[in-house]
Length: 90
Image (cartoon, rainbow, N blue to C red; front, side, top):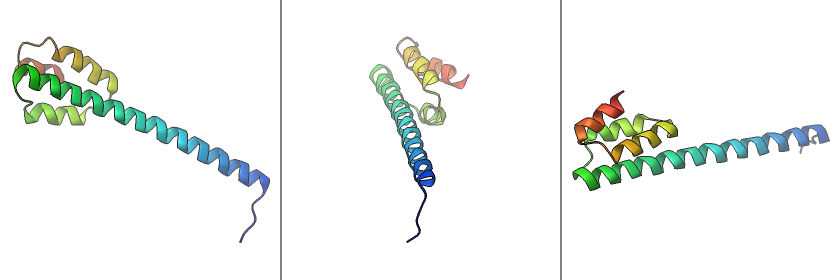
């Protein structure tokens, strides 16, 4: 079994800690995106009866949570699915 120095042990611990922190942050962001997409779909289905495939595909393509939040707010006020498609197509 190879021995590691205290310097190597500290570097390994620091790397593991940074990796865990980064993984947690990425997981939280993905969870936020998923929740926003689901909320948009739910609201569209409540208001218009369904979510067209074109809108569903566009939702899945969008990675920015801030943009998804804007779309969620727009979902509450658009007049039609076509109007919402115009919002997400920009």
